[in-house]
Length: 103
Image (cartoon, rainbow, N blue to C red; front, side, top):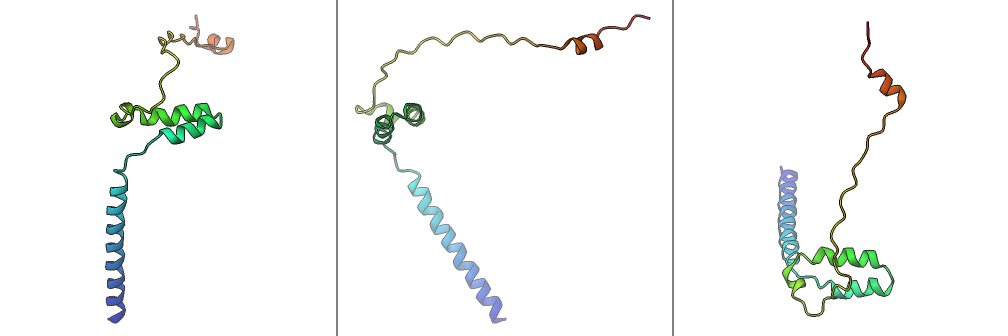
């Protein structure tokens, strides 16, 4: 009987710890991240694609778009090119097997 009470107490303490940790993580998720220092570090290391991807993720947020320190776009946006039509290739064997049979 005492073992069950200790097990129940341990389970209650574990549940309380999980709930407390959950609240702390929820509060940390609300903190704004400044992407400019990390972006500048990546550019200094000449990792341009990663820097563009990292900064691009944060550009959807208003606080980043309105930041006067954010890097300006130096390359003008161009129109997207027209999609290239895909052609379907079939082997001659498949094409002949699909031909209707004359009787």
